[in-house]
Amino acid sequence: MLINETKNKVWHGRVKLADNFFKRFRGLMLKSKIDYALVFVLPYETQLGASVHMFLMLQSIDVIFLDTNRNVVDFVENLKPWRLYIPKDSAKYIVETPEGVVKHLNVEIGDKISWVVEKEKDKGIPAPMDAISKVDFSKINNAISLEPNLKPKLKKP
Image (cartoon, rainbow, N blue to C red; front, side):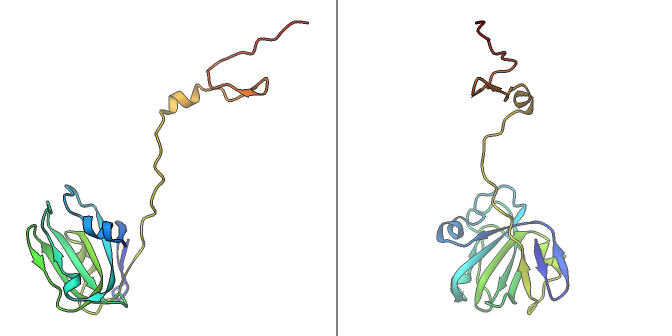
């Protein structure tokens, strides 16, 4: 979620961080569908280092440039692929968003922008629910059966 604290406007989309070299390097390049915002955390506040290139981008995006205090120093709407953009002032954070987010948040120079990052989900192997419901987890002679409807064989004395 992105929040324009100055105007009390909220965009309820997903937000991810690009807070290391590899995530910043990859960015949104070659993404066929951009349905989340990506916040680049730069090592230091700079103008040239905050420039954005749109090489290998497959669609247009909106970009917001923020200083160390998360105040907007520059923004651009509908930045098209195969372009280069250098912000008008130094930035510490770059927020790349789907088209229309800048307009939705009513972003202007000086606005304070904050965000809530989506938690990374643990990756696992999905299992069909009907297979799980057929498994018998009851204790059988100090063992757990993973075979459905398995009945223990009792020895007669």
